[in-house]
Length: 111
Length: 111
View 1: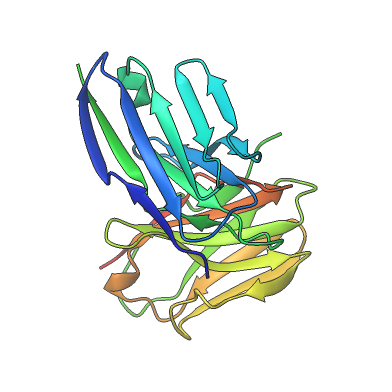
View 2 (view 1 turned 90 degrees about the vertical axis):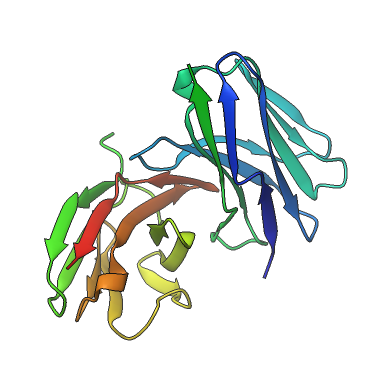
């Protein structure tokens, strides 16, 4: 099956600093999704990227899909304490409904 | 819409006891997934159903685990007998298109 590597595993930042997490696949992807899970909560869908080189923004969050559609990144500008949580990328293998979740990046924002 | 509903939210049981976790997917969603999340292993897919039919149960750890979906609005995950290593948060998710909507999870503790 598809392999996905997500880095870093943990990231501590000072409030106001930027944060980036990366997701790398061993194969070309049809699309990629990003989810956020707050501490004690459940994963919540953030966005789906489909096109090569696609860039999407949600307020301070910027999502990118690589030109080769094998990698993706999530960048947060000027982190806030509300950004705390674990960010997962998820790959949909083929036409199946099954998602393959990355290991996640746990973000801690220090006030 | 109430979202995906899971019950119970917390379950504490003793080793050897039977545990049944319940899930009500979002109305109209035709795929349902059961996940297990632990610190050590992250988010693991256990089984998923499409139109109430089990499609892939390769993630089910062993014969002690079983899942059913008798109709489009209800699914159960049963562990019999339970063991301490089954302690985890169990999530149910249903899909609309490629997007997964997770329930709040059931935190299971097996003593």
